[in-house]
Amino acid sequence: MTSTTGSLGTAISNNIISELNYAPWIGGIVVSMASAGFLIFTLAFGHISDKYGQRNVIVIILFIRLGCSFFYLVPITSNLHLIIFGLLFFIDGGVSGLFWPTIQQISVFTQKFGGLRLKQRYMSGYNFSWNFGFIFGMLAGTIIVYLLNSNYSVFYFNAIGLIFGVVIALLFVKNTNEIFKTDKSSVSDSQQTIIKEFNDELIRDGQLSITSRLSRLPLYSLLLVLLLHSSTDGVMTIFLTLKIDLIHQELYWVFLLSLIKLFTQMVATMIFSFTKNKQIARLLMISIAVVAFSWFLIMLSNDLWSLALLLTISGFGQGMIYPLIMNLISYKARDKNSAKPFSYFQAIMSSGRMTGSLMFGLTSTVFLNLGVVIILVYEILTYIQFNINWKYTSRD
Image 1 (spheres, rainbow, N blue to C red):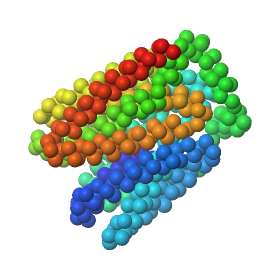
Image 2 (image 1 turned 90 degrees about the vertical axis):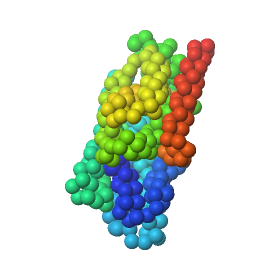
Image 3 (image 1 turned 90 degrees about the horizontal axis):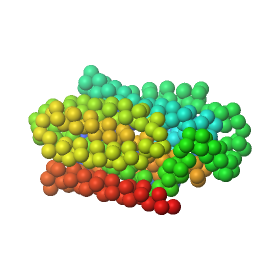
Image 4 (image 1 turned 45 degrees about the horizontal axis):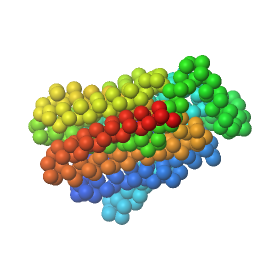
């Protein structure tokens, strides 16, 4: 999923603006359709796997995306064609938004049937594949465009990748009751039974008290921290292009710096997927501080190598946030016995990237770093609100 998604949006933007010579604002609208669909579908139907099962949902998602990918292969020849293209990209982004909460919900069942360690291994593998897919997609897109000198060629990579995805889903994807060799009734056991089994394990590990505090953290507080991660990504999308131009470097550095940041982010997500519960809150506050401090220095940076180093640090900090917040969201999903909290998780990831890009694009017309200043203020306020909410949980 991420290997095709990571390169497709960039290829569409470049194809529409550079190769078809549409105005940049038109390309921006078309590309944003995927994020809009992602947000709307996730909020409306993000917990659909609760009713229809993980396998059925994943297979349908991949078939819909595959159908869209075949349409993208038809060259755009008119404005009407472009409008239809944008609508299909909206649907493509929308069904992609249903994929992630469906996959993330499985983490709740891994803990129920396999214990805390199995859940941590699952989350580590999930976070690795999520980041690796983006890295692979960016690399593939860069190589394809470099060799063939055509962004349109990336559409074929997208279609081929989805063909493999459909085959893999049909052959290997199973529902959780099949994975853990149990029946559907036991998957939907009462929440009291689930919580009792979960608490028994935590009592053995001496983590029940701290886990109780983590479970009481307000959902909005967790989503505000996650919004920091995704909106920073959105800011970076526009910021890097303008910054690289300002320091008179070639545009391929935009791709390379993004890859460096994604790589350190991937490493961090793998490492911090195994974080003990008693360390989560402290590490979250550290990660927020790391991202804020690195972006303060990025704002002041005027050379390529310091920019690369600081983006590496920012990527590591953002890589800490993702698995830590997903771990906390899994407690909310456990308590509700639903994938809906994960749909909020993905909605925030999508809306943050949209908001960050839009905000920075607009504020950069005033001066380049105004958008960075705004995101820094938000990061500081996020640190304060999370710290207050964490302290408040100790009073209950």
